[in-house]
Length: 269
Image (cartoon, rainbow, N blue to C red):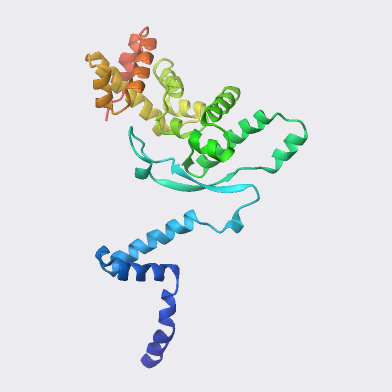
């Protein structure tokens, strides 16, 4: 019995390594011996194989008009000055062209309306697959400028009364406080629960808490007499964003009780 097993192992065993994983493992063993022992290399090989499978799926699964794109993961913790090379990425499948696009053009729909809907579609599809796109991503995909993407996005948001899940919104790295102002005002002045505000603004609870935390930190620093530069350093946000929060604080100053209540409600972490 043992002889038969040994024979089977010697005959078929090598075939287990005739794969991408086996070739990669051999490459690391021969060309990069400093990586460590066989167990360390095996873990690294498995992780790389998983990434290859995610980022290079079989194109037969793509429908006509679809494209694979790489987006920043929606759960990535963004911070001021953080590079894309330090961010978690994820592949997403997007409908660059849909069957109804030709139908809409044939029926006389305006090109700007089709592009506006395409911008919204790309943002939503990426978010549904745990990714977030920037205006720049959509600009490259649709062959238009980032400014035009921003114009279409704002038009869609105005029409539908909610924000698109753009990276600047989800990760709180946008240059203005448009969405932050709305959320903070609803929580501070209207006394609405975070869950209700999230449903109304199409934001995650994490994002809402992040906006509120930054608002509280800026408010506390401002009351201690800190300069804009000092607040920027302490809160770890840009000076331009600090100024936007200060402007919002000025807007809410007429209801000082609301500001005091929000500071006492939840301790800063």
